[in-house]
Image 1 (tube, one colour):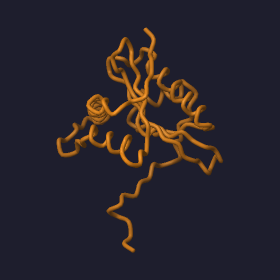
Image 2 (cartoon, rainbow, N blue to C red):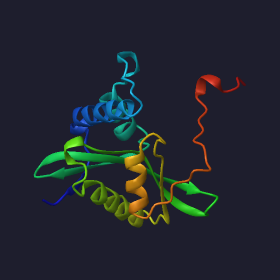
Image 3 (cartoon, rainbow, N blue to C red):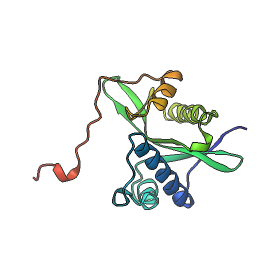
Image 4 (tube, rainbow, N blue to C red):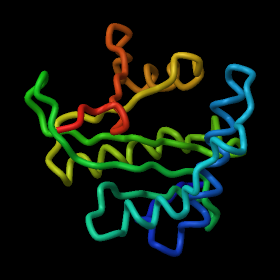
Length: 163
């Protein structure tokens, strides 16, 4: 069965919300925790606002097999100064549980590479959680380099200095 891809539309908000919940639940299960109700974000609303709002900040591609969604990825373009390359960033990559180990992940990453070429990117970057060894092994198997020397760093607005 082949995997096809399409650009997500506003009508996909509920689907993205559901797959994001599945992804969050899976990630939590990797260290034996559970997704707390208060940590659950309204991803459908966020998707509509951030992918289709006044200033969209990412795009989304949905993977389908026989008309059913089997995964998705979000992406946006930026620049990596260390490598001096236009870069496609993948902030979210997900394959549904029932579709794993069936070529969907490879198809998804191949589609991301197509989007990168269209956008004239010379590199694709994403993060993978250190407690997800199956994902790490998969990414290495397709030829990706897993940086073990870098640490993801974030600085939330609530901690920014006040002018």
